[in-house]
Image (cartoon, rainbow, N blue to C red; front, side, top):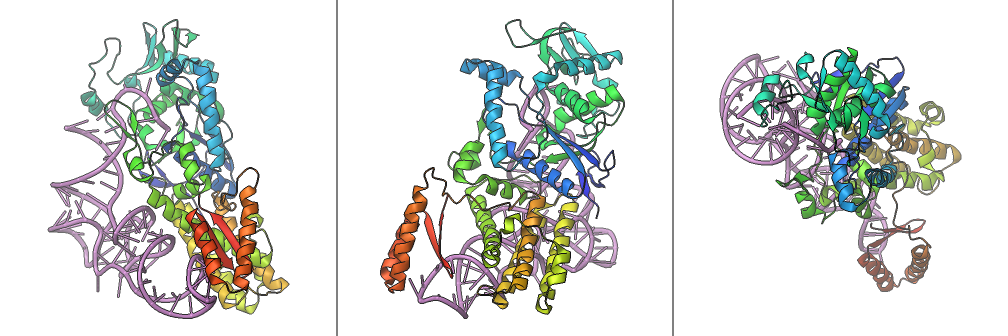
Length: 502
RNA sequence: GGCGGCGUAGCCAAGCGGCCCAAGGCGACGGUUUGCAAAACCGUUAUUCGUGGGUUCAAAUCCCACCGCCGCCUCCA
């Protein structure tokens, strides 16, 4: 099976072949840490974390790097507004970013390099460009000369002429070409900055990514990712800098994820979230979102749409996906209950399954094999996680039917139990490939002292007694009243189970 | 103005030349099950893919036009 990925440069799905056999380097543009992370910041990390997990599953040794921009104009303004230093602001915001990533199950990022820790590397890169006359200093600023990059525009597919006509600003006096961009920007002595060969200042936005990706992953690495909004100018400029300096292709595959549609930029430059405010109240930061929806559900939600498509966050969509995901988890838990096994931790071994299968299991085992095949095929096709998850839903239905038809709920012998556990593990082991369905959702029983747990035990016992006495009115009243406070009770063969809606 | 993306059932969403009288999820409606529910299972829910043309033996998938959303055009993932 061969993975094909859509490359923004060629606008086609290309066969994935790493630069170095067996190894993959991925660089993704991370956040500027000036304000709490919003939903959009979750998309890239979740997708590329899932992609790394998939590539790892396929046997590659993957290095995933996500940069942190910790110095730029917005940071300076925000820090000044709050009366703290830029570094303090960066520490604070990045800490909450890391926490959010963790909750989202994004645990495979190997490095979060910070721009301010790589100033020297940027100097080196700028020097290289200057030596090739592709960079020039004017009065403390250093510019990149886009005319020195012959295929400038190959990523965004813009022609230089287009940019000229689109450039509103008059060609700056100090620039050679209107399209030239800053590698180094002069700063005032009282502003944050570094002493450079060209004077006191701070780096331009694009240079950090070129310098860090090159330093960490090499002059040519495999995948460069980021949001579609970064295609131009950021990634185009990154290519110009890196490739002009090294003469090598910077990244073999450029992958861009779709943007979330919850935020819009108003004329005054402020972030607004029209759709969000309409549907989800005023949720906008990840922290606020997580208060309403389990982060692992958000992860599932993000992966239930193809990564190149824009995603609309809405309560309706999130709720629908939540129900679907709960149903899958319920199947997993059901199998776990019958087999008395933690299916979440189990891996599916098809050959073991084959060897233990009885005649009546043959068809089901075949289904499992096909599900695995179709799931992986979907992922191989430009990482179609949405298509892959659909396979899980189909398989879940087939598995439930198998359990019902063979009446495994009540009794089953050791062999049948092993087979069923393995069949169930097919769901979890496939889910694990992209870091999904890794465990039960946080049911809300997270109150620190477990008081709710204890109280619920009492309610359930009382209700069980009422039902035993056929006191349906009381039993139903307990259920209805709990429902009113968002706690639902399900009567299962082996006893009642409760769940709190988050 | 320039460049690019998108428009598939009530909602979300795969598919991107024949396997499509279009996957999957949510919802809805019947049925099995249940004390009643929930969950699970069975069945129904787009002969049609924004609109109009065209190419082709064959189009949701390619081309053109139009309509509607959206992104980028110097620092937003």
